[in-house]
Structures are given as structure tokens and as C-alpha cells.
Length: 337
Image (tube, rainbow, N blue to C red; front, top):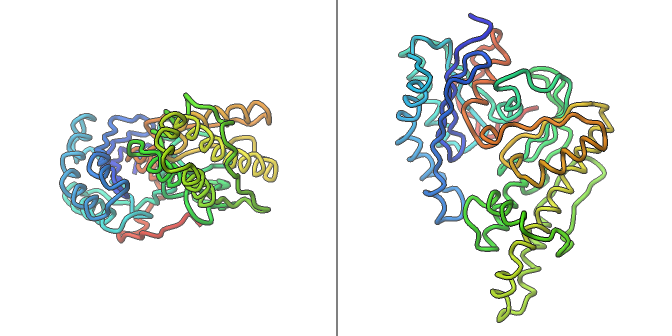
């Protein structure tokens, strides 16, 4: 097997159908078919609809990725596919397709941990941060602070006790009648608002755990306390301020955890990955933390923050050539440690 393999990545863990061709550190294609319009009316992901749409689009998406990369199935050294964590039906669609494709193309199929894919989203087209380093995975489904000591060697230093940060963004966006997905919508409004408009609570623990359910509930009660006859006009006038105040609370919690973990571990490099890592307020605050604490902050290109198949291929490449099929079954509750 080559040291710099040509890999087809496939990602279907949630609501994005994605495929990519990664040739060593050269990304030859990266195709994502979003289902945002499908789920927008429901205010969140409907698993059955997600699975059906994966079935509909996975073939065309993979073919698009191969065509864009000018790559035939016989040119591939392997197929890397997400096997967990994620929605069971969605994972099954991706894994079943990968098995069939790999059999027909006569190349190995490698199961990849979706969370590890996020870890290596800063390594897709380069070396990424030197190990050891800290990585904050912050998305709609996960909020974890991980010490990466080596490839495949991870220690989860802290994680959410309830809601993930991205989930809190989505719920608050619903409360404020913003577009789906909620994270980017809140971020856009927050840029125009006053983060000191209201002091929402910040949860802090002696360890490096996170909690966002109380913050989410605080926003709900704040809105409920406005007299019903005045509520619509108040929200319309202060929607951006509420977004900015809520976002500042989330950012403060995340950045404080990174600061504490960096001091505890003595690392000099920090990566922040996952969908929420695209948030402009968070990125700005992390860069400021880096300047203040002399930390090197590594942020993925925005296209690699959301779920994508390039990061899945990158994760398989990081283990190459020692990678063997980790599993050919899905594990919706797969963890890093």
C-alpha cells in the first residue's frame, strides 16, 4: 500500500450526504449534498427523512466526487466511510454503499469514527498541529475537549453533561424565529447585536465538563417574562442583541475551558473543530486567547467545519498504511475513548 493513498471518503452520519477524493494531502474533490431544506420545516433532523435522502443522493454524490477528481474506481487505494457515531439509518446507508463500492472496485473499506474525522479536519491538506495538542470538538451533537497525544491516542478531558453547544444554538434560533440551521443564523444576527444586552448564565464546573441546557432554558424564561402583548415587538427590536448575548455566553464557556485545559496540560497548540468552530465570535475569541496565552490556535477552513467526507478520508490517511478495517458494522454510539 502507498504511504500517500488515494482515498474515497464517504460521510452520512446525520443529514449531509458527502463524498471526497483525497490524494495524500491533495484534496481532489469535496462534494456535500445538504438536506437543510428538507428538515427546515421540522426545526431539526427527522431521522427517517435523512435516511431516505441519503439513499436518493449517495450514488450521484459519489459519482460527482469521482468525476470532479478525474478518478476511476480502479485508481483508488481504499474507501473510508463513517461507521459512527450518528443516526443508525443514515450510517447504514453510507456503510452499505461503501461495502458494495469497495467490493466492485476491489479495494479495502475502512470504518472511520466521525469524531476522529473532526479531529483531523485541520490535517486534511497539510500536517495540522503538532502532537500533542488539545482539540475542542464542538458541534450540534457533541461538545468534547480532547487531548491528542498521538494518532489514535486520545484522552477526553471534558464533555457536555447535557446539550451540545450546537444544539443550544439551534434551540435558541427556534425561540427567536430564525432560519434553520440555527447556528449560522444566530451568528449572523450576533454580529449586529450588543453582547452585553443581557447577562445570561455561564455554567462552570471544577472539572472540564460543559452544560448548555441551563443557558438554553434561561433564554426561554427571559423571553417568557416579557409581557405577551409586548413580546413580538420586543424580540423584533432586540433579536440581534439577544443573539449576541446568548452567543457570548457560549463562547465564554468554551474559551474558558480551552484556557484551563491548556494551562493544565502545558500544550502550546489548540485545534477547534466541528460545525460551531465556524462561528465568527468563537473564532475571534480563540485568536485573542492565543495572543494572550501564547497559544497556537488551529482552525479548519470553514468548508471543513461542517460534516464532510474529506475529513473522513483524512482520518483514514492518518493511520495509513497500518489502518485495517476497524469495523464493517455501524456503531451509533461510538466514542473516542
